[in-house]
Length: 422
Image (cartoon, rainbow, N blue to C red; front, side, top):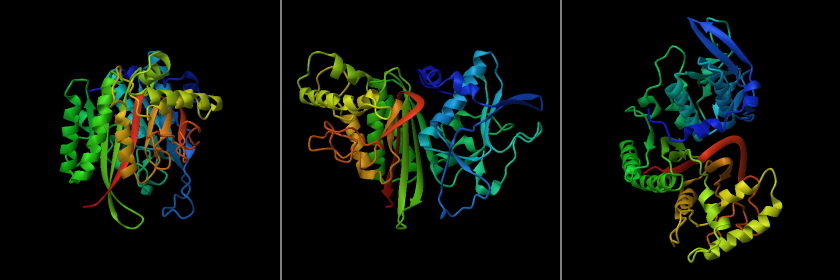
C-alpha cells in the first residue's frame, strides 16, 4: 500500500506520553490473541436537540475528532517505544460520530500506517468490555452503529464508503482496494498523487473518470478538478511532498426538498513546510521587495503591526501566517505576477458551491474556516476572515479561527461542494 512521504512527522508530532498515560488500558486474551483495550473517554457530547427524529434512549453520542485520533496515536506509540506490538482496541461506552471527512480520512490513514509498517491492527468500536470471550456488546444495534460509528447524519458519504464500519477482529485485513475505495460500487475515490511531473495531471484525469462514472454533471466535474488541479501541485511544489486526494459523492435533499449533489473533497500532505513557511520568508525575511507584489507585501506587513498587538490564545502569529496565504502572494521563489492564485481559485469555488459551513484549511495547530461570511474579499481582493472584510484593520472573527492540540504537518483541506441536480 502506498503511504505518503514524511508520515513520521505526522506521527511524531501527535505522539504525547501524557495523553497516553491518561488512558485506562486493560489486556484481554481471546483465542490466543492479546488485545490492548483502551477507553476513549475525552470526547465531546453531541446535542441533537429535542426535535431530532431518532430517540437514542439511554445512549449518548460523542464526537470523534482529530484530537481523539491524537489519543490513539499517543497510546500506540508508547507501546511501540517499549517494543510491544499487539492488537489495539479503542472503544467508547457511548456511540461515536466522526466530526468531519478529514477526520475519517486521516483515521483510515493511521490504521493502515500501523498495519503496513508494524503489522499492528487497530480497531475502534462502541460498547462495553463484557468478558474475555466477548470484546464488546452493543446496547442498541438498531441505531445504525457499525464498529462504533453512527452513520445517519454527519459525514455519511465518507463513512458509509469506509472500511471503518466493518473493520472488526476476525475479519480479513484491510486491502489496498479497501483503503483506496476502488470497489465498483463505491461512490468514494481516493488517490495517491506523487511528485512526478505528470502525476497531478494523471490525478485530474482519474478524478474526471470517477465523476463521470457516477454520472456527475460537467459543471461539478470542472469545479472539483479546478480545486484538485490547484491544491495537488501546491503540495508538490511548495511542500516538496506527495499528497492524497479523497473525494466522495452523495445525493442529498435541501430544506426546500430539491435534489442536490454533494461532493466532498479532502486533500492533505505531510511536510516540514506548513501552509505559510515559504511565504513567511518572502514577506518578513527577504530584504528586497519584489516588483509585482510590493504593494501586497507592504499591506501584509501593515496588517502584522495591527494584528500582533491583539494576539491571544485564540488567535496567534501562526494563525496570522495562515491568513497570509489567502492574500494573492505566492511563496515560491521569484517575481511573478500570477503568484498566489491557487488559493484564490479555491475561494471562488467555495463561494459559488459551498452552501453549508463545512470547509476549512488546517496547517500546524490552527485552522481557518472558509464560511461564506468570512471569505468575502474587499475591493482589492484581500481576504480578512471577518464579516467586515477588513484585513488590515481588524483580526479574524473568533469563529473563523479554530485551534487544536492535533498537529497537521504540511496542510490539509476539508471541502464540501453542492450542485443542483441536472
